[in-house]
Length: 82
Image (cartoon, rainbow, N blue to C red; front, side, top):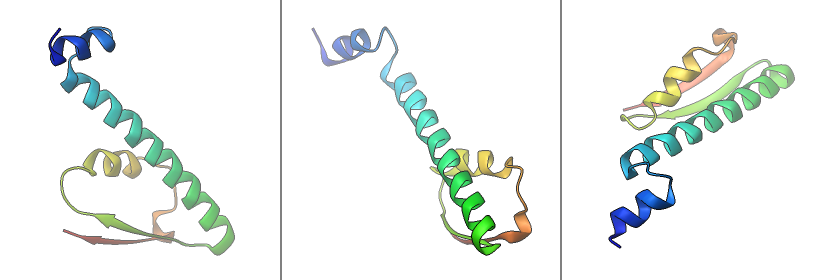
């Protein structure tokens, strides 16, 4: 059995590209959840949350989800470099 066929069979007929997007979505959801919790804790304890953000296309999905958080963005200090 070829590598592609064995992989597709192992993940229930899902292609490698689709499986990769699904895994990335799971990871990005987990990152947003973790950042949200860290931000909430920092805001409660210090009144500010500091974060350094990466440039490029990879983190864009995470940044889109973060932008939808119900938070006081005036208390976030974000450093971004492309």
